[in-house]
Picture: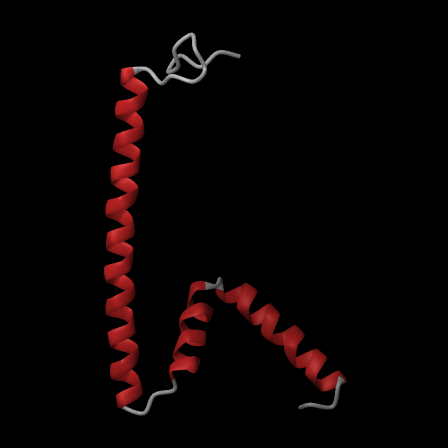
Length: 90
């Protein structure tokens, strides 16, 4: 199977392929910079929450839970309750 972006030599990229590769890498670098900025912002918000005596660990768990489908989350909680009950933990 031959890729049209490559020269006859498998070790050399065509000018178009090089340009496309450069474009992809630059986009990924910009996205990584954006991601780092968002992570810094989130760290600041968590620090603010901690300063107001919110439990950051629980806030992270709330974020994870809110991403889940409600029915799936309820099913997992029911199974967790069942398991804990079976172990005498509830």
